[in-house]
Length: 164
Image (cartoon, rainbow, N blue to C red):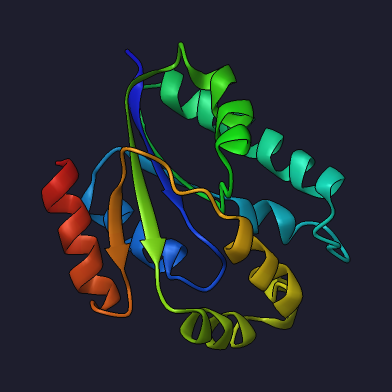
């Protein structure tokens, strides 16, 4: 039986990973797949298009296996454009029973501050974050959670109540 797929998307520093982890802890039988975990395996990440393609394809491979085993997959990535979402998720189309999008947002200054506070190997260059924000295409439909207005725990609670 195919599992459900929950996509957390937004620019770096919005709180996607923190909220996704909290949601995963409340949902038995879930798997949290994060692009940052794959990128952390790269000795010196460049955030190039080719590198991003490798990262997304790797996450999809793991997601496909987990979905086929009936897990709820919580995938956590920028997913900054409709094209990126379609290209990444189309190979999973026959592997999930349901898909939900959670768009995590906050003001740019907060995102930049949080991003700068990451481990040095995980910091996304500021110009890349700004570029991502200027070109970001929000998914529709999606549950939008503004982490400027809620703590991570409150945001996770909103997501759990809305999706489960």
